[in-house]
Image (cartoon, rainbow, N blue to C red; front, side):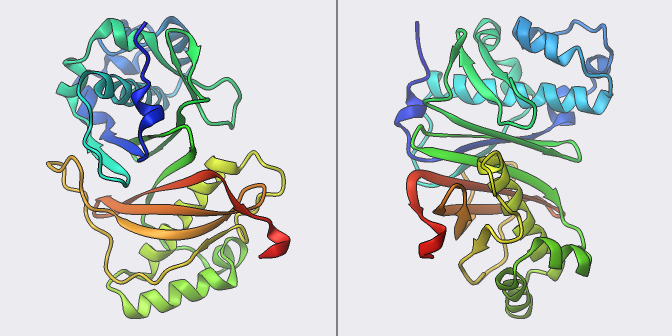
Length: 289
C-alpha cells in the first residue's frame, strides 16, 4: 500500500484554497439531498454518510469542497512532488485539478471529524494519519482553505472577511499589547485599522483550532503578535502556485507558552487568510514568561 509519507518528511505547511463556485461551476446538483454526481462520488462511504446529514445547501457545498481540497493535496504530493520553499505554500485549486484526479484514490483518502469541535483527521486506506499529519480547515463566504503540516507541527488556518470590530469586542478579545500593535501599525503601515484587527482575529482563530481543546485557552491573552508590520499583506494571485506571504512571530498559549510562526495574505481584496504553525515541544511555561 502506498502511504503519503512525503507529508511526514516535509518541513513546511501546504495550503490549498478555492471557492466553491470554482470547483462546482454550474453543477448545482450537489445542493440537492438525493444527488449522486461526479463530485460526491469522490467521497468515501463514511464521508458521504456525514455529508448526506447536512440540510443547508451552503453547508453541504463547503463541507464537500473541504474534503476535495484535502484529497487533492495528499494525492498531488504522491504523484508529483511539490517544491520545497521552507515556508507555507499556497495553491489555488480549480475545477480541472479535481476532475483530473484518480477517483478511486480520492475515495480511499478521507477527512473525517470524529468529535464535534475538534480538528478533522486524515485517513489513508482506513488508517488514521493524525500521528503524521496535522490538518486544519476554514471557510468564509464560499472560500475554503485546508492546511496540512508535518508530524512535528500543529497547524491552524482561518479565513475571515475584513470587517470593523467594535470597541467592546476589541477590549474583550484583544490584549493591551495587541491593541497597541493595531494602533502602531495603522499609523505607520498602509493597512487599515479594520484590516489589522481582522489579521489579529484570524491568528486567534487559527490558534484556537490548534489548541482550543486545551483547558484554559483564552483568546484575549493567549495570542500575541511580536512584530511590526513593515508592508501591506500581499494579494494572492490565482496564477501563482507559491506566492509570497507576510510572516509573523507569535506567542501562543497552548498548554504552555509556545513560539509559533504565522503567515498571512489576502486571497481577495476583502478576504484574509492566515495560517499558524506551532512546533511540538517548543514552549515556555506561562509562569516563566
